[in-house]
Length: 480
Image 1 (tube, one colour):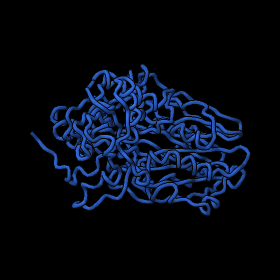
Image 2 (cartoon, rainbow, N blue to C red):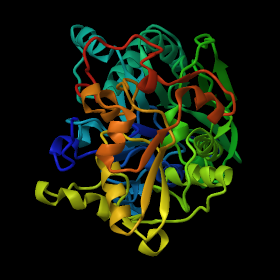
Image 3 (cartoon, rainbow, N blue to C red):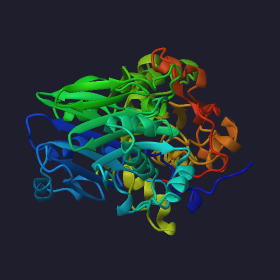
Image 4 (tube, one colour):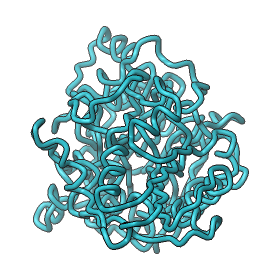
């Protein structure tokens, strides 16, 4: 049987990442919005920890004047009170980013700010385009000069170009949407408008909020809660919403019946206190645990979750099975989801940097360990080994998602098949490789039950049923 060397650098990074989070505000009373955007981004930090930025404008000021700042690092590392005080404006957009390999640089941080003949645009994008390379080439041949390697810049150029042909920015956004294929939630700031757009399949979330005389656009509702805004509604897949002093206008001409919302938002990406398209994330994770207890029961003494996304599923498993729920892990909250990797010879300690096991909780016990996914298997192997080293008699692993068999092309860094452990191994083989006593995954046909019977989601990473024809070659690293 094929074994995986868990110290092999090829398998060093065994976590999934969302591409980014977006947040925008328009304050009709003229108040500065930079500090509000800061707190909104802080609440969305889990969606990207590599770079962040804020761009603002004064709707009563000169039309072309946009103030912006962006850099590599976490929100609280990049911004301080002095920097925020310099960003004066009552309309603005912010962004947190995680990139795919090879495109981690300050130039690729967002929001993008574009000066063009009709004025200035600020734009933040969450998602991944499938036809970015072709569009970039086409634009280059007509004189476009690109400053970044990200597909978001292609969208910004298309909007700027379309604005020359139509009377409004929202019309330009709509025309650009007709040319781009893939996943995108966009927030576009023009001098007097804030525009939100979601691709027709609705891969990535986007919602609207309101606080006093200010309107908000956000990747998740948790950011609205953080800034004291009330949730108004989700932006519909294919919808373009335009916020001006006259209120909200909506264009649903690109809305369609078939949607493909990313199911992994509910399993892992979104914060548990968020609600996406009417479904509570915490509730969906509890449901996943309950389903696992019914489909993959086991005799055990304690159920534990791998923090943080595994905890609600572990609670659900405990509620359904009657096995006591407990805490077996202490997480170092100052590490975040990504951190500087130790050198090769120290790599086996990387999980210990993030998680410590409470020996008293597991010693001599049969443990059910719930995690959200297994990618390459390296992290699971290390955690099982930590539990057994702490004295666990048995470790039964339950995964609150189906097995990853296919890459994602829509903004999640699920790697190609040759790096996915489930693609080349049976469940029994994976169980042996990670050192567990048993292993069970959530079944694909239970995903709808997890989100209370809702349909219209994308499960291509589990099934290979892509809602849009995937590219013939994997170009994700080129335009990340």
